[in-house]
Image 1 (cartoon, helix red, strand yellow):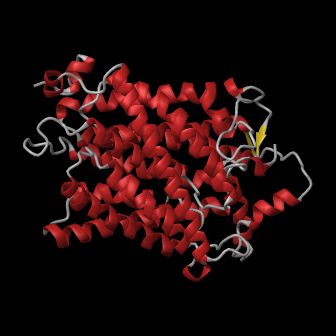
Image 2 (cartoon, helix red, strand yellow; image 1 turned 90 degrees about the vertical axis):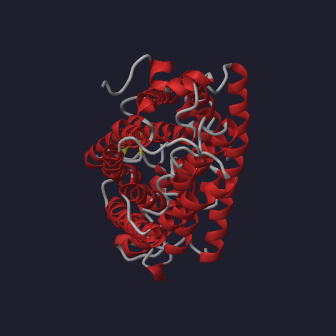
Image 3 (cartoon, rainbow, N blue to C red; image 1 turned 135 degrees about the vertical axis):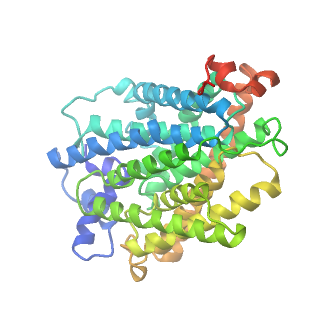
Length: 446
C-alpha cells in the first residue's frame, strides 16, 4: 500500500522532510506522494522500533494512566469500578478493532465516511504487508490503542452511577458507530476531513472532542449522582490522581510523537510540543486558580497537565514549541472556566470533567491549530494556497461535524442501552458503591 493510503499521521511524517528543509508547506508531502509513481515502501527498522514503543506508551496511558487518574478522582467506594471498567473497555475494544474496527476505519473504501468491509477479521493483512515504512500490523496496533483510550475516557462523564454491563454494551456500540467513522474521516486518505486538509495530528476531533461530547451527553441523559450538590463527592486519593496524570504525560509522547508514524523530524517536533504545551497548561491553570480561589491546588495542577496535553494533541506536528506553550495555556484557561463556572451554572454532573477538559480543550486545540500553525507564529504552515482564515473554517467544520455526529448518535445509543439492560443501578446499589454492588469487593479494608 502507498503511504498516502493511510492517514494524516503519515502525511505529517512526510511533512517533517519539508520542515527540515525550511519549507512552510508540509502538506506538499501528500501531493508529492500522489504525484510520484507508485512504489512499495521498504519497512524501516528504526521507524518500526519507534512505533512499537509508541504503541506500548499509549497502552500505558490507559492502564495504569487513565485508570489511576480516574480512580483517584472518585469516592473510595467506586474506585474498583473505574479500574474494572477501564480494563474491560480496553480488552473489549481490542477484540472489536481486530474483528471489524480496523476495516470500518481503514478498510480501503473510497467512501468519505466509512472504511468498508474488505479488512474484516484483518483479511489480507500479513507480517509482510506495510503501512508506509512500518509493518501494517504495527499500524493496526497503534491505531487500536487510540480506539481503546477514547472509549475509556468517556466513563469519567458518568462515573459512579452506571452498571458495568451497560458500560460495556454502550462502548461496543459507540466505538463502532461513532469512533470508527470519525477516525476514517480524519485519518484515512479517502476521509472527508482528510480531503479538506483538516489538521488533526493525533486526535483532537477523533479522540478528545469525541470522548468529551459522548461523556457530556451521557452525564445529561443519565442524570446526576444521588446526593450530588448535597454530599461530599471530593476525590478520595489525589496522590493516585497525580500519579495517573504523570503516567498520562509520559505515555502521551507515544500518543503525539508516535503519530508521525516515523522516527524523524515530525516526531521530534511533536515531542518537544508535548513538553512545552503541558508546561503551559499546568502554569496557566495554577495561575488562574490562584487568582480565582486564592490557592493553587494539586487537583488543578493535574487538570492543567491533561488540559495542556489535550490542547496540543491536534497541533503537535504543526505548531512550534512557543506556539505550543500558548496553545496549552489557552486550552487550560478555557477548560478551567468550563469546569469551575459553566458546569455549575448549567447544573450537569460531568463527574470527572471529561467534557470540561477533553471536550473543551480539544475544541480549543483543534481550532487553535489553524492559528498557531502559521509560519509567522513559528508553525509549519498550511497546504499550498490555503490561508489562515480558510484553515480556521476547515477546522471549525471538522469540529462541528464531530460534535453533531457524536452528540446525536451517542444520545440514541444511551437510550437504546437503557431500554435493553438499564443504565443506572438500583438506588441502594449506587449508595453502597459500585465496587461492592457490581464487583463484590472493596478497594480498602479497615
